[in-house]
Each structure stands twice: as C-alpha cells, then as structure tokens.
Length: 197
Ligand SMILES: [Zn+2]
Image: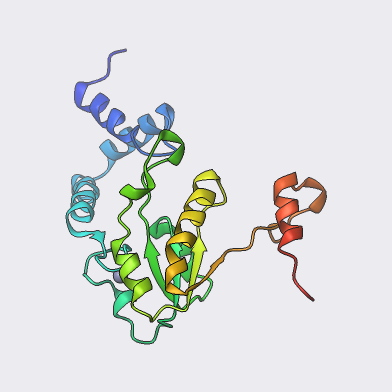
C-alpha cells in the first residue's frame, strides 16, 4: 500500500532521529496524526524554538538560551575546577552527582577515526581559561572509547604549560555489577584505579 506522501515524508523525517527505526517512525507518525491539531503544532513549534533559541554558551559550550549560561553566571561555583565533557547531556548527568565546579563542553560531532583533525576543535575559550591562572584542576570526563583516549592525551598536553593538574574520571566496575562478568579492559582499569579503603 502506498502511503499518503505527507505521511511518508513525516515518517522519513522521524527516521532521522537516533534509536528510531522504521516501525517506531511509522507508529509515531500515525500517533501524531491522531493528536489534536494544537498539540501537533506545539511539537512542531517546540522543535523550531529549540533550534532558534538554544546555542552553545560562548564561554563554556553548554547548550543554553542565555549567554553566558546559568552555570557560568553562578558565582557560588568552584572556579578552580574545570570539567571537560563531550556533550551537554554529559554535563546534565555530572550535575546530578552534585559536582559544583565549572565546565567546558566540546560539542563533539566528529570521530577521530574518520580522519578528523584535532586542531579543528574550537578550543580557544578553553585555552583562555587555562591561561587565566584561575583553574587549578582540569577533570577530563570524556567517554572511555578511542576518541576519548586520544582527546584526553591531547587536552592534557595543552594544559601542561599552564601548570594545571589534569585528572580523568576513574574507569571501573558499575555499581551493582558482577566482577565475573566484567570485560577484561574494564576489570584491568578497575584494578589500576584501585583506592585505599
Ligand atoms: Zn557557560
């Protein structure tokens, strides 16, 4: 059966979203068609608004609708500790832990394995912060994959001339995990990062 062209178009647009496969896209599209028109418009408008009004903070890179963002403007934050993250979603997760330092978000939309050049990263605001003398520690909260490894080394080298302590998140076993089912690399890193009790 040939679908109505606008419906087919909606399904194709939804298919561009992560984790949405053809069946889910079709289900969502049909659901949207059943919504009251005002609600469907609200969804469409929310997408347009978010695209128009949200942008990376010019200072830290967090996605925000006010520049500088609320975190950069928060005087209560510990200014000497800077956490480098790949995405704003990582910042949201780290905020939930009660971390009260500042952030630098790379907004990483590349893969080093695809031949991306690290020099093309927008790092000047980070370098400005490192050379300001206010940062004592830079915490690298990058994903534990190959890109994260390469980026961590690159950023650690950048920080060297500024006498900033560079740390990275410990790699280890998930809470509630089972040692016997842990993969070799995770277990080895957990051993390397062992702490006194
Ligand atoms: Zn900011």
